[in-house]
Amino acid sequence: SELIVVKGGEGGNKTNGYCGLRGESKSIKLELKLIADIGLVGFPNAGKSTLLKAISNAKPKIASYPFTTIRPNIGVMTYDDLRQISMADLPGLIEGAHCNIGMGHRFLRHVERTKLLLLVVDINGFQLNPKHKFRSCLDTVVLLNKELELYKEELLDKPAILVINKMDTEGAKEKYLEIKNQLEHLDGRYLQGYIGMYMEVYRV
Image (cartoon, rainbow, N blue to C red; front, side):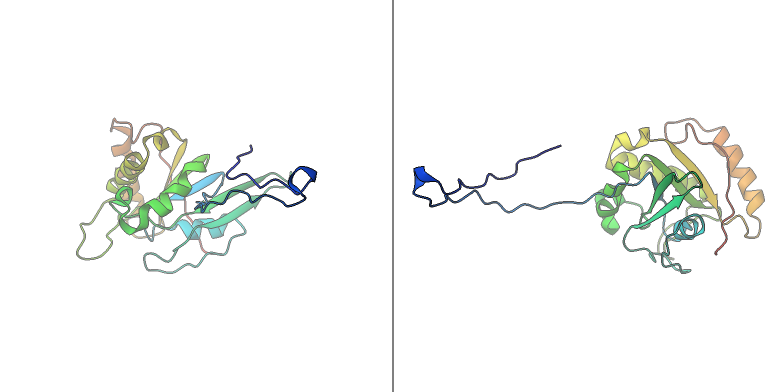
């Protein structure tokens, strides 16, 4: 596609005595939105960067504290038939991201141009810090969808896969069976279409 932002001046020629005419000028702000096939979405410390590193060529910073990822990372998976799939690891969202809390708009805008969303949640739930309310695994699933809807409702129309992470922790499989049962019996737009699944991701 082509977009004319400002028009250039007329070049020098016989009609203007070979004195070129000044073109238009304008200050503009360009906002880059990443283009990736898959977007990793989740609360801080859910394991998004670990997943990206395990299945792609990316080398994101990984640590055991929240907000390790402060800018999007892109990883590319290349298959034997030379097909490539790009995956974007987005910085962790927090409650109120749709209101730009925690620079939520800066991160959510990159979700808009992905083809598929991978919602990564911690089977053990999430608590930002002792001052914040603890959120169960199911709570985080609902809250993530709610943040996406409040930012831009059409994001809920994107294909999405739920990844329940950290299944190697104590009591995780029992918690997984419980949340799977809860998801199967819940109605509502936020949870429709999810397939009960979990992934064990190991650092490599």
